[in-house]
Length: 102
Length: 305
Image 1 (tube, rainbow over the protein chains, first blue to last red):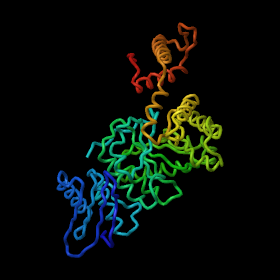
Image 2: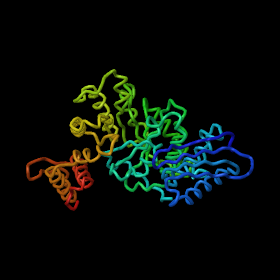
Image 3: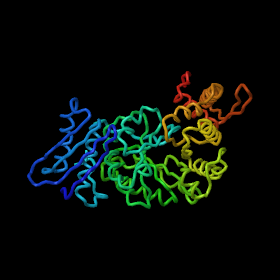
Image 4: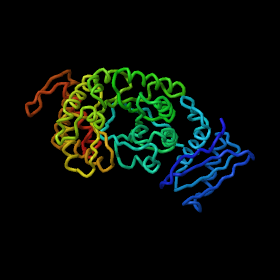
């Protein structure tokens, strides 16, 4: 499973986060984070995003995160959704709940 | 990550079942604070077609992370006429929700189809088979006419609910104060649910500015014998709880029945009369116990039963 195109998920509403993943081929995760709570939680948000990407097997991507105070569970949900949208394949019946999605 | 939720209780108290968009993090993160008996995280009508995928991820992590305490967590899945329902069931079961609300149920076969998919998902994700409960929403004249068959279709099914929006559309009627347009559907559904021994829930009341109308509808729900109601706004919760709460007189009577029954039963007597001359047998006991349970949930019971 790999990113074929840019995938975006989430909104700019309060308690939500908008995540965009774009495929690259330099083997790096280039993470840009904007957050209304960057001073308090910036490091934790980045860690959560990177952990999710690692589980999903994303090794090379441009990642744009625009956070408005999302909980960790929301951050994970948006990263995963952005990834599967970017993969552009039919995953119905095959999503790995509790495996790479957790 | 929170602990898995305890095994759901099939016939728990469900006075208030509040809908919440599973896609909105701001809503679902503190859904339990409002005090509804059940919340219904919605993957169906509240979620736009192009966000169906996204809502499942939100739902999964909410189920796995947020401690909903004693609030029952039901998920409304997309209809069987959509491409979404199978994956909806997988995520519900994997996330460990208490129950699934089947939208637009038209026949017993719809319930059986969902039941089978739930069993498959329980096996796939290592969840105890039979753990996940079901409820069926009747939203069409056909669904209402098939109510009894639907109510009997699965041992997982704890109740049946009416969904007024779609039903009224099919019947070409609008909302009428007093509910004459829904009388047949409500009556038939209640009768079917009671015949099958499951619970029965009324439809939502959508005009949030009409407090009087809402109270009138809840009063009628209570009089008709509904167990509870689907809600769309937290401000409706305390009103339903208050109106479903038994009176002190009802509580006292129920206590008397339960106590007297236990006393007489231990002496081997099945039928007896109370001090007010009312004849009591075992048929009265479940009703009396329900009154005590309601009184406890309403926070107005001070006895020791």
